[in-house]
Image 1 (cartoon, rainbow, N blue to C red):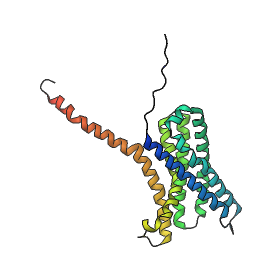
Image 2 (image 1 turned 90 degrees about the vertical axis):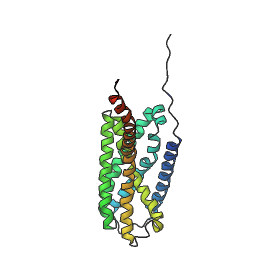
Image 3 (image 1 turned 45 degrees about the vertical axis):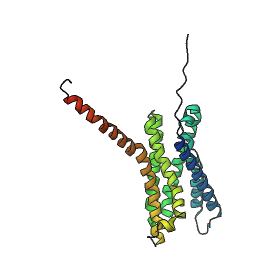
Length: 229
């Protein structure tokens, strides 16, 4: 008599689902804002190639901001693995194109202080996306997930720039110069996004492991010094 045992049910993670929903909603809000900007902005004295690259950059942001919340769901990965792979390929291809466009557009942005952070993080965006693709091709899926998370963090940084811009008056009241505020928003949005990912994947697990180790250390020392051990 043979019996088949299905995969074990996954534990509920309501806070993770809430976070994914918030991230998806933030992506929709940013895309609606950016699409309106691209359509209605003043194109006077701008070269055609820059208009094309801006359009490519915004259109490429659609899968970058809307796909990852579902991609990070374990239930989606388990139930629809083929869709997960195809959506992941679409995401990485869009990330690579958007990163290349950002690297070209970076030197053309108004405000010289914004150009270096944009080009730096566009380069990191490209490297993280290529590393995620390379790891997936070789079956290193744990590393693949981490590089995708880093790539997504940089995509989200463009959302955070908009959010910080809406609250900059109370947040940056100590910075009266508007140019300095703009540069500060650029750096904060990218750095805080990446620090959040590193904290989730590296710092917090390391702290938890250290706590478990320190909790078991006294018992092991007692056993080693017990006369009957």
